[in-house]
Length: 297
Image 1 (spheres, rainbow, N blue to C red):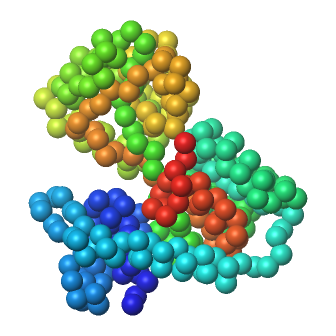
Image 2 (spheres, one colour; image 1 turned 60 degrees about the horizontal axis):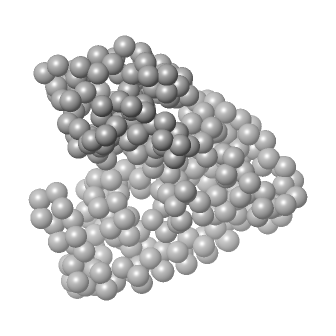
Image 3 (cartoon, helix red, strand yellow; image 1 turned 30 degrees about the horizontal axis):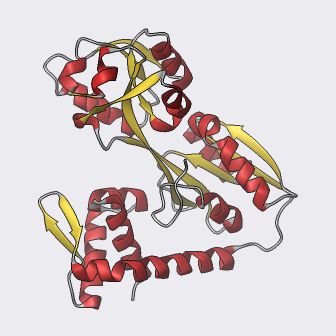
């Protein structure tokens, strides 16, 4: 049985979408479909029911799922062991984008240090393109970046950070916690722009409106955008990980917008092929991008 077929099956079930599974596996949607068709021929049964855009496990698919997850977990663990380069180095150089540095790295580095007590860690924060160049030049060992497609680089889906609308304490929408995209067309909007394709999906939603929202502040720093909202200068679409403390404190409130559901920032953990497998496995234990891993809280 082809392990790639099992991988496609597990990821489609996790993400509920052939397209999304293809995205995180860095393959085309037709390739994902072909892998499922191959798996169904091997099992001699259908594993998914497709009704419109809805994808549900069949009874046989539900029966097979725990075995598929176990097979994939054993394979990935074995792969990491085989690819391991032996002795643990004294230093690990990690690169990350600014959002990962701000909101994930403190937890990740402590977790890594617990697993490798004698390890020294050097962190470099830079844009995705710079980090890829540094990895190729072997100036860093691992990196957390946005999506990359490069045959020399191994990418592991690590984290999906949903983008939602947040309003300040006392804002009229804070009570309802739910609104239509049309309800924000007269609001002052703070827009954090990082150049990612995920943010372009928001722009497309705005462009579909007869009267797009008034983007008064367009900033390239996530903390600046958040602090403008906290100062009641406007409201903003922000990644969930960036506002956990403020939501817990009640100073920011998430407002559900149906038209923007499903938009998220995706982060991958990358390395040169076959390198630092042990560290990668340790870090992936905290990731949300892999359906076999625990969630970051």
